[in-house]
Image 1 (cartoon, rainbow, N blue to C red):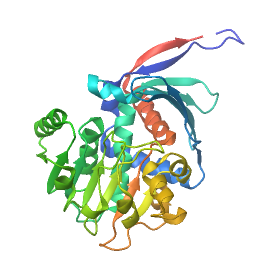
Image 2: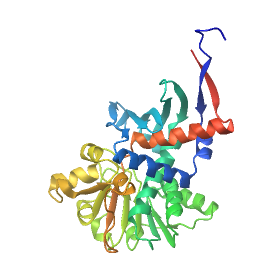
Image 3: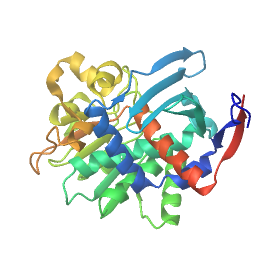
Image 4: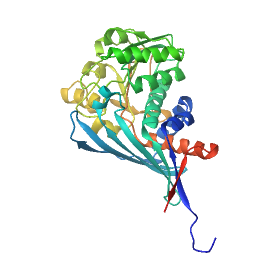
Length: 336
């Protein structure tokens, strides 16, 4: 090659099926532990997401989520549309891509389906929270919701605790039946419950993964020792838990800054006076890094409020790209 000429550049396009095959749940849980611990130690940058409202029949949005990892260096941004009305048409509500850049020259190296990454990494972070906060003997699982995150959370909970019983509820019975059938096909027996209360009472792990704007889980239903992963709501005006549930629990978050700007499950009880600003105990990454205490006793009710962070997408994308390069997966896209 003549001096001064650049070698041809390309990036890998990685579809959802390939991404899922390269990112098993147990591995993703460990990746999330490392990424969030690094964020807690100041080894990463994760600004608040930018969300632009989009006119639609159901309130929708376009969001951009950038992040930077220091060791090894990598950069990335997830760009997604969020159309909650898609659920009624059988289409994913979150759609878009994660763009991965290498850290030496800032060149783009991968374009990866965001539906697959979001589905796996969101549940993996809940798996991490459950591994760190739930009682060691916890195994009675309740899932409130019946969509993509219900499926991925079932896999994540299986990865971190031996499950004795699994109950599920959804406001959409046809979707609930489909979820239960799919679970049965992979050897997981899930009981359909007629009410959220019937699913939640007596459970020691509860995952709320609905699109609800108002509470589907009440504090009066919670037994001492329960652990909750609150996942479905990611805007300040919506919540899945009532104020009593949040008041009774020791609250952990993925990022304080995000919770104080985006988490209705925290902000609404705060506005109502049910909790104070100090109700957030720690970030989950601080526990993973050994910087904060999690569960203190078997009677603690622990609550992890998940909003989803770009650093999680970046860590997952970097792993997927590494595995794609190693196995020859993905489709090269020439760059100028």
